[in-house]
Amino acid sequence: MTNSTSTANDLGTPAAPARAGRREWTALGVLMLPLLLVSMDVSVLYFAIPSITADLEPSGTQQLWIFDIYAFVLAGLLMTMGALGDRIGRRRLLLLGAAAFGTASLVAAYADSAETLIAARAVLGIGGATLMPSTMALIRTMFTDPGQRAKAIGLWSGVMTAGIALGSVMSGVLVEYFWWGSVFLVNLPAMALLLLLGPFLLPESKNPEPGRFGLLSVPLSVAAVLPVIYGLKEIPANGWNVQYVLSVTVGLLFAALFVHRQRTTAHPLVSPVLFRARGFAPALTLNLVSSFAMLGSAYFTTQYLQSVLGKSALEAALWALLPSVLIGFAAPVTTQLVQKGVDRAYVVTAGFVVAACGFGMLALAGTDSMWLVLAGAGVLAAGIVTVISQMMDLAMGAAPVERAGTASSLMETGAEFGGALGMAVLGSIGTAVYRHGIPASAPSPAHETLGGALAVAQGIPGRAGAELLTVARESFTNGMQAAAITGAALLLGAAALAAASLPGLRGRDGQE
Image (cartoon, rainbow, N blue to C red; front, top):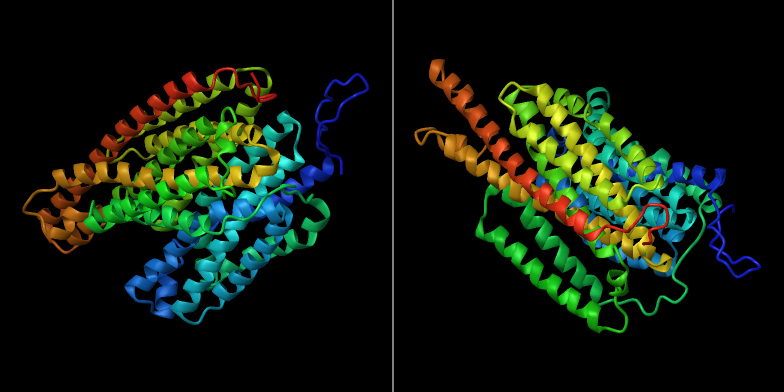
């Protein structure tokens, strides 16, 4: 292959890392396809659920599991799969995951019962958990030149972010013209391409001295992640119910046990060495904050387009693609700035400030401000992608190459936590403001959600129904404004943290 690690010349001076050639960039393109589909599968059922419900007749609980189990399994197994890839080989794990993902997609497409579909979605989550950290770890292996690695990671970040938005749109288009199983069949060509070309284009890499696999750490990591993610995902919709608070608390207790074991065992699943690498801990923290802002804002903008402006679900999804245009510019421009010698601290700080401005635009929105909301979402997303691409590059450059899979999985697990936390915290703030604005005399469903208010208002004839509709939309918008102000304040705090913790870490070499 064109790529190789740094060597020493005859004078004993370390040679510059070998630059990646056409083969590595072609391999990156092959890796982007499964990455796009894995991220799309988070949202691909948005429009397919009604058709699935009509065909398979799942219970309410089964419908929730059909939708949520993919993300739960994915989040719960990221750390395990990242560590496993470091031990058995990232390419091997990637290809095993692609085979599992493709097989599960085929089973899901032709599932004849809710139970079969739930099981297939769970296997899709397992496959996704192998694919995501493996792709980033392989990028770390293939692109040893810091500048090229930064470009590759920028592409990775853009594809990952865009995939979530594209998933819902693709779902709507496919369900419009085909049957619901088609949303799963689109995974097959990409996985087949990866299985055919991967053995020839992708290098095998693993930790040469991995030590024993910490089996006890695996259930501890799952027990730490799943209850927290579950509780945080339920809080925005159902409030701070004791059940969900208890779930988060139990998860945090297991997280403390997991951390203790990693620090004391001779064979940790996640080596503490990673956190001693300069820049890794700040990258993990700031990446988490970025996901907090991204998904926390999406909780409001998607509802705003549908329930406040009255767009259909497919129309809302199509309009929501518009902010993605700015994402396409953000990562490449950011990479160029850092490679030209601009201190990473300045770039990341600016990214957080830009994202805070996006929240500021959302805070100014009224009930008829579609363009302002779309512009705000685009500015916010551009700022966040700027941060994410730099934090992934910083983390992967700081981590020892033999632990690249574990490092990638930690960053992605942190992003899952951040996104769930963002929806819980900002969603709860918005819900509290919304409920405060609904008249006490309004029917109970109107106090719960904007969707409930819209359903109630349709059943109330005349002026009273129209007034309830107006008040509900204004209350939701006020809640979005309050959440946006909170988000902007958090991002400005993150900008200050970046300015304090990142100076000296420059993009070209990751060193002072």
